[in-house]
Every structure is written in C-alpha cells, then in structure tokens.
Length: 387
Image (cartoon, rainbow, N blue to C red; front, side, top):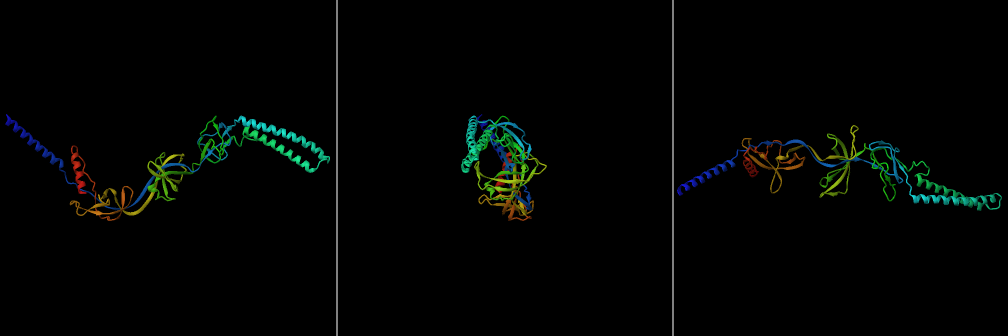
C-alpha cells in the first residue's frame, strides 16, 4: 500500500513538472518583431505658447455722482449705446438737516447785516449829496454795502445747493447723471431708491454706471516666466474666444509687465495685446480667451518625428537607430544627433541625419491577444534590453 502511494506521488510530481515546463516555454516564446522605418523630411516648425486670459475694453469709465442723495429715476438700461452728455439717471437730494439749518441761519445773518448796512448807506448818501461828507468816506460805505449784498447772494446760493442740489434751481449740474464718454453701458450697479454717495477727496463715491467702447478691445492674460523672455512688443497674437467657437481674432502684443506675480508656485507676467475687432462679431466685455503666441519659427528645415528619438541613460543626449541593411535583415546602428526646436510632434535636426537615412521606429509593439498579457509584457522587456 505504501509503495502504491509512493508511485502515485511520483507520477503527480512528474506531471506537474511537465506542465510547468510547457507553461514556461509558451509564456516566454514570441515571434520576431519587424521594425518599420521612417525618413527625415523638409518642413517648417513653429514653437508656440498659449496665454490664458480675457478680452476687456481698452478704456472703461465709471460714472459717479457729484452729490449725495437717492436714485429717483434710471432712464437707460445695461447694453444701451450712449453718447457723451446723454442722461442716465436722476438723483433726489436728501439734505442734511444740520447743514440745512446752518445754511438757513447764514442767509438770515446776511439779511440782517445787509439791512443794517443799507440804513447806514442811505443816511450817508443823503449827506454826501448835500456835500456834508467827503467822497472818500462815502466810497467806504458804498463798498461795505456792495459786500453785504454779495454775501447775501452767496448765502442764498449755498442754501439752494444744499436744499435742491443746484443754485439755479434746475438741478441739472449735480442731480442729473450724464454720460461723460460715448460707448456702451456695461453695468448699472444701482437701482431706483438706492442711496448714493458723492465722489470727493476721501471717498471714491458710488458708481452709477460703467461705460466702455466695445469696438476697442484688448486681450489681458499671463505667461510663465520661462517664456516671457522670448516675447517682444509687436509680436502677432491669435485670439480664440471660449464663447465663440471657431472664431479667431488677430491681435498685436503691446505690453509686457516688468514685474511678475507668484501664482500656485509659478511666477506669471501680465501681457496685453490690441485686438482687431471685426464688424461682423459682437464681443462682450470679459469673454475668456486664449492667445496663441509664436515664440520661434523656422522654415524649410530638416525635421523628424519626435517619437523616433531615444535618449542615452547616462548623458541624456538624443540618438536614433539607422538601418544598415535591407528591410528583411533588420540591422540597425546607433547614431547620435543634434536637435533644435520642436513643436511637440516634429523636431528640428541640426546635424547627424539626412533625408536618405532610414530611422527605426523603436517603440513599435505587437497587438496583445486575449490570454497573452504576459506575452506582451515579455516583448516590452526584450525591446528595452535591445535599446
């Protein structure tokens, strides 16, 4: 019985060893890979960068009131085209009670002073007409009387300004908010009934409306510090608008910021470009946009697909493998090359290659079949060893 069990175990071990050997041979066997080749060719390369930003009006003017009060009426809406002088809104004056009372008291004081000076003036004028007083004394009284009249007019004008917003009573100068430039109303951030504050030396004042000329637009964006050194004022830009698919506008770089700002660990520099607005396209202020900038361009140069390049593990310098025999022989030799600019697809060949050289497609792989994933992994490993 023990011998029978022993023979059975030996048989099982033998079968297991045969199965393992067959599996190992099958998993490590692969067919020969036939490498295709490509040739260098003459073409042009543009090295580009993309700056993200937005399109905004070149000049945007904020309309602010000259006097504090409450918005009584708004005559225009956002998006309306206006000319300089057009009425936008009207302010209702709400005078300060203390200031109004002080101004009223000043008027009363000026009236009292004028009445007293007038009595003195009339009495001395009668004496002057009779030749009792000298001309010099009467001229002094005449001056005092004229000054008292002017003081009363000034006090009355100040009282009207505080009470109505204008000395003339029409209130056209202060309470009527008019456009100071021609353009399009971009925003009216206030509503009827809102209280507004006048613009002065200590306060910017409440913005009644913002106006801009939408036919004069600029692109405002940012570029990385690694690329800003290659930019020059006057460089052409291609502007793509996110809101208008398929629309591309021409622009010209007009400003590069002398100082950068750090954003998420990278230093960014602000740039601006004048945009050529087409009559057939309506551009709204604040559209997000991308500017394509050509950093470097070369025409009629020898290029090759960048996917054909390999890099030395020690020196990190590029090289390719050149066919030294027929396609069937699949013999290749290493050749070091010198490269120039790249557009991400093709790269310039400065030296080391000609158009006649057949360059190996070193990263070619065979399609992986079902159940042979390990077989594909073995191919990739063998390719790395060949490289």
